[in-house]
Image (cartoon, rainbow, N blue to C red; front, side):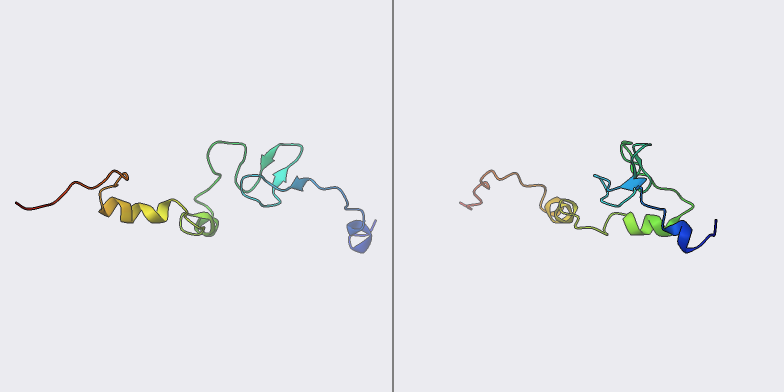
Length: 90
C-alpha cells in the first residue's frame, strides 16, 4: 500500500468530536476525554512545557464577563443595591 493519496482516502471515521466545555474538535469519543481541555476532569488541562498554549487560553483572552466588573466594584466597596445612607449635614 502506498503512503499518499490511497491511504488518505480511507480515513472516514472520526475519533474526535466537539467538546462541550472548550468547543474544540478534541473530545475523544472512545476515551470520553478532551485532549485540549481535559473535560470531564474538574480542572482545566494545562502544562508548563507548553507556554504558548497557556498564553492562548489564560484569563483575559475571552470576554471576562464577570471579572471585568470586579475591579470597579471593589473600588466602591461592593455596593449591594440598598439605598445609600443620607449625608445631610446639620
